[in-house]
Image 1 (spheres, rainbow, N blue to C red):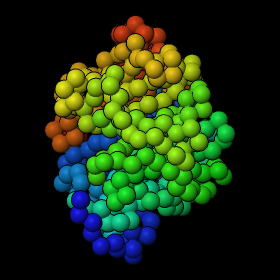
Image 2: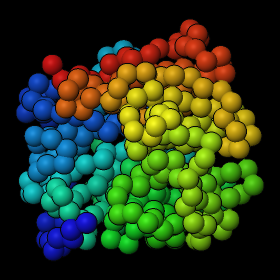
Image 3: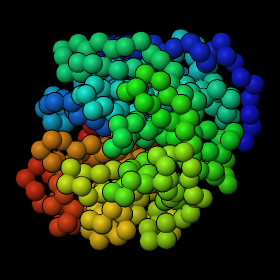
Image 4: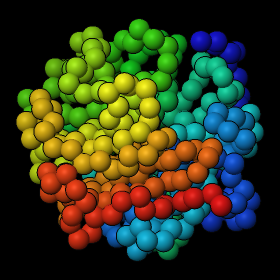
Length: 353
């Protein structure tokens, strides 16, 4: 991995957040799009991803946020774009999360360059305190921590917030902690990786109090002290996945949900699948195939108060250029089919014409 000289001047400039940005960012202007996130605040459904420039990665990459007020049937795309005043700085990996107080956080990563780590990759965020108004307002963009954040934070039973972010210089799947509801973040720990590559780890607190970390290619580590120390990363032998981002989270029932590319050969981003564990991750007996087609990836999940699960993912970032939505219930997973009244499959959030 090549490490480029750090440019602190560029990196410390905040991005520009624009509401209803106009024709320059419509779908027809995009050459690619991908890496979605999803969240729900009241009756408003949100999705975020990134695009811009000729490809991923490239100068000119920017974040996109869209919303739907009719349960995903139609979308305001884009409602918000996040760009940087210096085109050498990429805005990428836009991530959504609703905190315990109902406030919507929008995270993204800023980086100088396209094929290197500049030593200053950082996770930034804004917060929408009233996210379902006609024209939401947000806090000023703020740099939270080093590294690249690709999955949602979690809240421990202690009340601490944990945020997963990593970089390739120290080969650590970093876990940052906030004890003041997101005002300040400190690196608490994280397992070491043998390879210098994408980790994209995600966290869940188990019923025995341990924190379980899963990352690309379904490697795992556990912490018994709320993220300070971790056992070595090992391959999960009972699950096989392509080298791609996954999702792990706890449903309102208390059961765990895993979304990943179920590929026995660990090669192809096909067979996007969700699995359900009734025993805190020891076994995954129930499965629902979300999308069998090739080049489907990067699932993100949110569950509504009524139990309906929303899953966003992308398909063929430079080909079909689709951001897609599936909805289902826990009963659908146990049945292995989209059988509930509100379930749907392969519904469009965004497609470049």
